[in-house]
Image 1: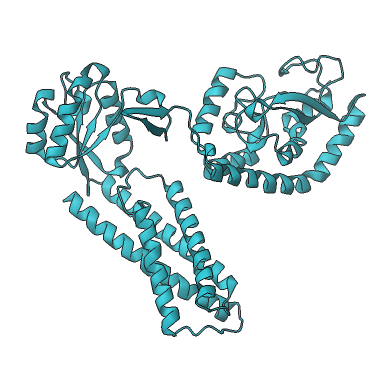
Image 2 (image 1 turned 90 degrees about the vertical axis):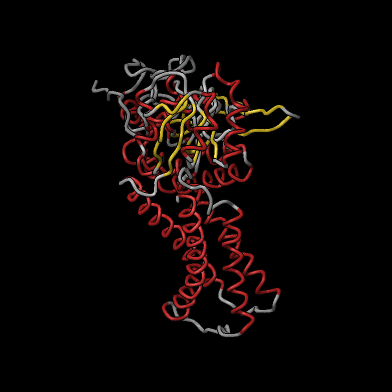
Length: 444
């Protein structure tokens, strides 16, 4: 029943995306020529143009299909889906523009095509958000459930069951488990590992979740054979689950599968270029925006105590490349500035230096480091690979004289789970309070 409903939903999803794309083109034409004004020269009813637009709508949903946007999506991350749609539509719009030139439709509005890209992307993403919200509500009330059988009764099986109970909107229901140990929180025990084939044949689950302990791995061939025979989808929770990243990269060497335990999204050249472009644009904007503040802080530092306005300290950047990190000087010049982290009660701090450190104003010159490529606006602290202005550890309160081990855990999580959305979230949290730390302002 669930498989039939899923097939029908996928078909409706595909058709509606094509219709929305077509309507978005019409809407973009109306906005460009009726609302914004302008001379309309395209023959909108010409067979060549109509065929071209219909062909584009069909092609775009076929690309969505090829990228798996109509497949098994209950666990798909929304942010990745949205970015994929934006990128596909952007490339598709560029391709449509190039096609106009090829078929000699040269007198068209580029603004209209930009509007088409924005409207079509927004329409498809919004439709999917509304559909996902409706399905989540529907499933959380016990409808359209996927019935699964868990094979295993150890820590991983119980962890999986807890995660499902915490996310009822996903619509999974555990029919029972197959294992050798009694576990009440896994529901009904359907039998042991020798009965897998018979249990799957009798119960007909939508999916099998294999969560074996290391000592039980010998039964894996029989489980795979049983699932294949019954035509049941099978997912595997590896017994080293707690040590692998969210999105591991798996490569093959002959019959050996290698899992990269420290793969990061920024290993991809495309995403690395996107992040660098964001750093350049944001740092330039912030330098211009905060230039009056930086001038005022520079004057305050100069008047607070003898010495230079800026303080530079060598840090280790990406690929172990050293660089000079810039800050406004917040301490008296004593010759011990390079001896490690300062503390909350550091006697070297000036009163004005204590104030600018409290509100992280001493870090504003680091935008020039970002512009040069020494650092990133968002990223790990220096004890991992490179120094940054803000990061996941900082917005969670781990700044300055705090546990390095705990900061490393937060920063490793950031590296493995990086996305544009996560960077924007961190920057927003920083702007809404992350710049204020727990340091006490000196009053004398």
